Image (tube, rainbow, N blue to C red; front, side, top):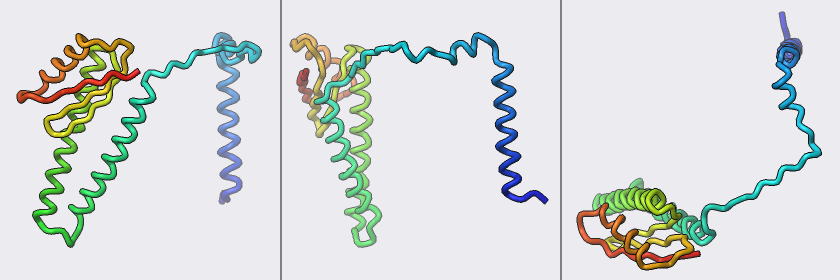
Length: 164
């Protein structure tokens, strides 16, 4: 009968043997890529794609959203809440999910059409968009407003803020 110690020994020995055979059968080209000279230094420039302001806005928005959703879920799961309160909380949760989907769609459109990073806030008929761009011109703002308005059948009050 094999005990645990012998089983571990056989397992590790088998693993070492398989790796040794694999190493011995590797081709020269594979070995040359593995043996990289460590004296060479490769410098790469790190490029940050999003503006720090946009990241801060997104983080703050997500924290508020998580808090609000947690509060609504607590109301929905509460035994003390009335049916009307639960329905209102559920509808508000659905509205939040709908707004989040719209925000993602707006951000995607701005990224695809204008190659810009953005942050979107939706509050009823008001849509506030913060765009990270070096150019701050009205033509770009108007084009973004038109692209966003095409998503909706009813008129929305859309504001654009440039941040850089």
